[in-house]
Length: 97
Image (cartoon, rainbow, N blue to C red):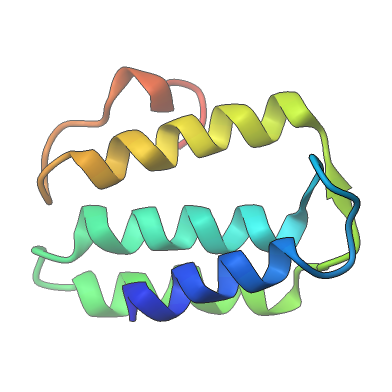
């Protein structure tokens, strides 16, 4: 599931937006992948992953997001992916979750 989300994130960056900009869909897919990783060890991890992934279905591949928002959310996602499942929320995620 995580691999599919990252593949979708890569694909969505190649469609609908200019270089060096990020779409709502790309950011949502990246966020969903990180959330899936962060909750995968929990009893309801699969359900949480499906819920956060499903939320991306209705996001736009053409609607750009601000660089500041994309950078903040991407930094949080990277930090979540580096952490072990169930670890405390990293500082990069303050104000995002």
